[in-house]
Image (cartoon, rainbow, N blue to C red; front, side, top):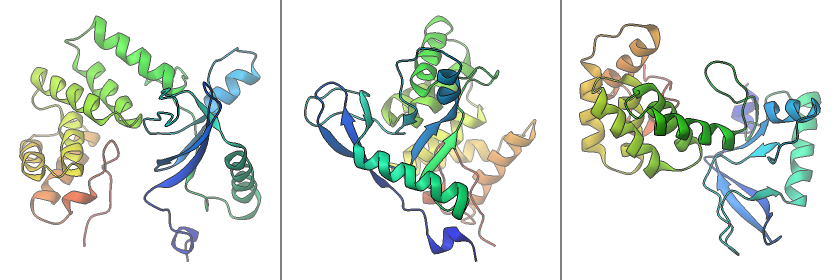
Length: 233
């Protein structure tokens, strides 16, 4: 039996944080906590970075002073993470799925912290507003940061430029479905379902859209930015 069946991953977890501006602690709900190994390795190599090794994939605003994205782990959360890392490395590898150990960066292999990546894509869109790829990648990054409204704007802007951009179509549909706007989500999936794919990733997106439209895949199981979910047999 899979350990993930014994210890199922919750839809969201509470993460203990400490505001780096006012110093007060608070909790933040998110799908997971990310240990950014790219930042860890860069610090080991001697880079002076203003970022923490841990990243919360959500929009984090201190409830005490309203500072945004200015946080570190609280002492109890740090202790919990240390136990989780020990557990996954030495006892039951892969069991603590709420803690994700990843390396983040651009598609060309440049390693960046999530905050760097968001700013990097924002600059690319600012200087190349007609380039659809930058808008979609920026939208994906904004979604990753919990900025759904800003991500939606970028997806829509990308589709104004390229109405058949498959990644924008499926991710915008998923955002709308999460918000309960199912009719518009299905409209975007209908467009996607009629596209002739030119590569494997496009084919997967088109297949998923078709599965939703014939009720083989529930619309509410479509994941933003990660739409590769199991089909119903």
